[in-house]
Length: 134
Image (spheres, rainbow, N blue to C red):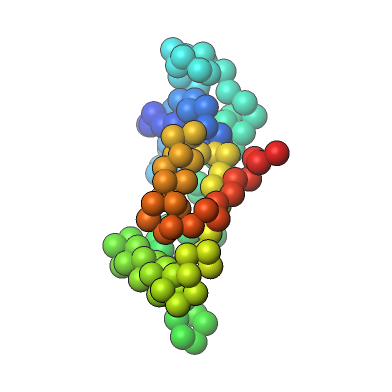
């Protein structure tokens, strides 16, 4: 069994653990004992929240919706160029307040800060929200 060190994606704490990989499939998790946050312990999601990795419906590549409503697989560079182009067109046509961004509690504070900077400095909108907002 191969062990792959990674960072948990369920919240912004940044706990580390090892994914137990057998035959190219994640079969379990082992906490990293010397991690300063988790100290060898994990929450329920950290312990058992890996089933999505092997799920057959999981998207593994970006998709772009076609004129006929179907989706076509593409690479990340093409997808990002498409998204950037569409955002520019929408902002030019309807103004910066016609777009917005949503961030996540799964992101670190630093990642959420960067999303705010992207929204305000690049997209010129204050329309940004967060799922953990009180």
